[in-house]
Length: 295
Image (cartoon, rainbow, N blue to C red; front, side, top):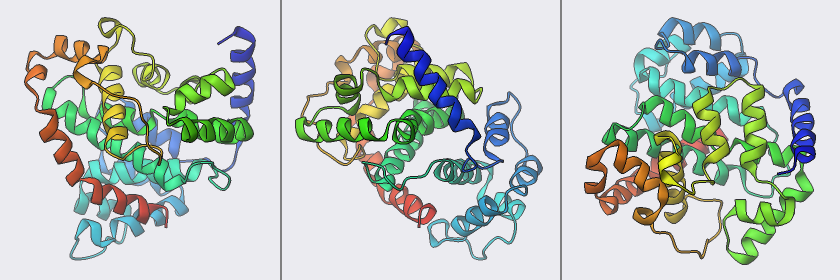
């Protein structure tokens, strides 16, 4: 991408920061979750109390049959106690991001997008725990945010994004390839610009910027390699952008595989087929959560 195009992209992304649609609690919550110390129950509850709409949405989700609670929580603190901090963080982040950008004129159904993002997040957390290749909470956050640039493009470049999505559908090619062909850059570039404005941790910015740019597995971080492979795996298992991609995918032949093998010698012994079946089993929960949050 040329320097002038990158500069123009950053200028247009800067305008997003002032939009009132971004919940006030989102960036402080993100900073809390990225901090070295674990977020405490009281810290999360205090933050969410500042935004009544997000708090109400979180309680509505926590009260759904999906989580099987005998009694609906009456406060965020009660929800954390009953569901556990990790589940509540998952609900909060997804609620915040879902409210951060208008989805009215998206060329891809918003629920399809969030199903992909949430699927990548949950699978990244599960895979990282199996392989001990990176922090599982960091992997979840990276999986959830990896395609944030698509949301940026839908706001900043709506017409161009529609053209790219239509091309991807027609040719059955990955979205980022269609973006390069029609826009000259991908959602990875716009996502990086927004992530840097939001002061997201450098390793997650790298995932956002590079999850489609794995050429030499040895030069990629384990976190980038993990999310890259999970993104491919999700798209292979009908957790993509709502259309069929006709290109072949060889996960074990992908350069990112070499990075994870080098990081964890047991990776080569991983049963990919069994893992994909496990991921298929979690599809119902992912779809339910997305439907509840965006009802």
